[in-house]
Image (tube, rainbow, N blue to C red; front, side, top):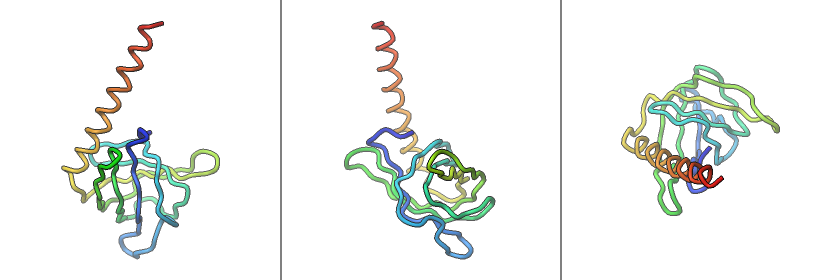
Length: 127
């Protein structure tokens, strides 16, 4: 899950072939996993299917005023229903994206996670 100052907003998620929208509206989605060329996130409304080629546009926000717009072309490699109310967990393997921007975003997440881990370790030491 992202820190409150790290958000991942999807403005558009379309089937690359048919140009049909796969999400009903703009959504701030919950990111489950960010890796080098894969992203997994949960969204409340999604109408895509496995192996579908997609175009995703959005913004990676790493602070109060820091935002990176992105465009990703990829393939849906994972799809499952999760939680109540039902949401879709979508995994996209990214084929075309800005590696520089993506690496920066991942490094920001890792830095914040290290800070959280350090705080938690400090709290354990006080017990």
